[in-house]
Length: 331
Image 1: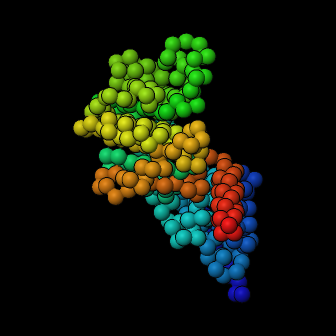
Image 2: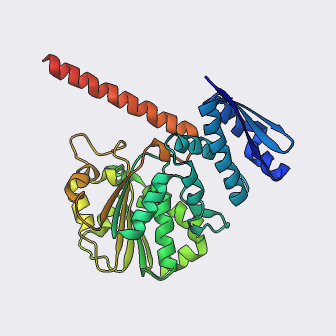
Image 3: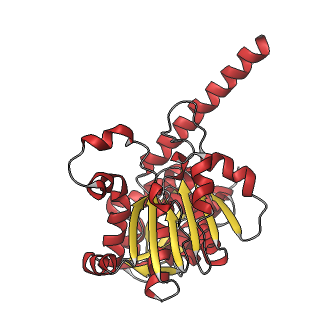
């Protein structure tokens, strides 16, 4: 194999420091993935190794430098994701994701897509009146939907925000919780409140809630209503029955936008009950104006261990399916 050395000129020691990461953690990831040696000399990063691997590491480093110049920093998770994109020849698109900011949190932190899957999701929400975001935990399905909804509300594109979840885990347990009905269902809606507080701020949320412009309610509250000029988010939709899903989707009124999120691998319905989210993909997949975005473990933006956990569970599920098939074929 032919060896090669590539050089990348760095404009300042500060950029160099940020590209390398804390304790050179980003560079160690690169060296481990591509089997190259990376060093610094005379204001340049030197990459030595097998020709194709040195070229790949050079492309990733170039994108990392671009991101540091844009955002001021890059972490191990972003480095890891750029390496995955490089395998598909898509590493240059990562920097483009950073240009599209949806909004800012109350602390001034920008909210934007961190993966290609998230970018497709945001674009689908912009182009369609009904979007289903389906995928594992940690992919930003609900958070990005909330960011889009709050931005549309602030911009006057809709009059109301309606956020709902099925309180499946509740059942008869609700009767044992203290307080009125709202107090009893609030624990199931807490993740929606958390996102509202972070993006909108607690004062603005309370003010709009009192005016009836923001509604956070369990799915059962949607029955018999027509929801017009509203941004409507159904979260944890894997825990709806087909009947509940149909009921919810047919509440959709003029001037409204609907986002449905869920993870079909985490259904909490009682045994024997079908998930409305699983069925809806088959029933509505070819209707114009409705988009389905399916996230994978590559879109997980929580700790990298979450990706590995999801992969491990997927492998286990595949083993179970193979065993079932073998037993069936045997009989």
